[in-house]
Length: 284
Image (cartoon, rainbow, N blue to C red; front, side, top):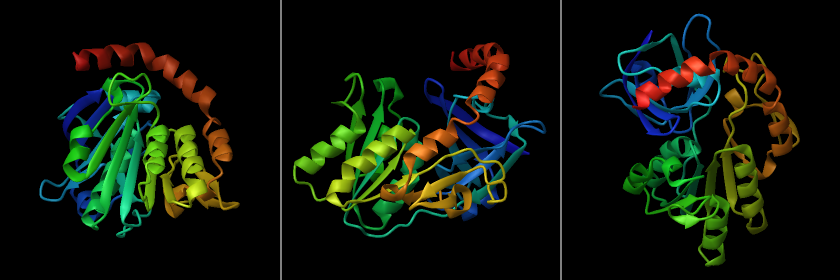
């Protein structure tokens, strides 16, 4: 059992958890993830480790309540327990001094981009962060990004805060200004990552994305997280989660991620009323 030390909402349906997991905290590196299981009958879901504190023996995860399990998780609060937290899993981010490195986070993807942005800064890069959300309230971790990045550009789809437009449009604007960009990390919804790859490809800018397909065991045994990269099959949990964006087949990835949509919708509908009431009570 893993005790939740604290939990707080950063935005509607997006919650930050600090979890007591000293062994994982001592070993994790930027880009790695954990797989959690809430209880004996729960499904296993992958969540990126957003941060860790070795002295406190804690890890930080940031969760968007979308499906049944993530909504159930977001009901929990400080003092509650999670049945299993397995990790760190996956390969760590490849970090070097590229020059100017841009980290792009779409929605909760900002939480996944954050630890790599920290590592890129520590490696001596000039770091730029572009963080997006549909509205102002869905732009997360801006203050944290400002503490470790040289430049931070919030964007909103509706223009309610920062740059009015998509993260890809802000990236293109920087390129059009003549900024020399040597590396781009993009994390968020699949269409957004695909759009970033399409934006940087004509300029030959090295671009990496972090994939988050369906996973079960996190060890490459189940094959549930298959993706196509450079026309070859990879297992995201052990070969990734980060890959060259210009080699990822995003169309196949989107198709595979829709495989269990109907099952997930049915599971969610059975619990949604109860979960929404609990989440609303917690937010209030």
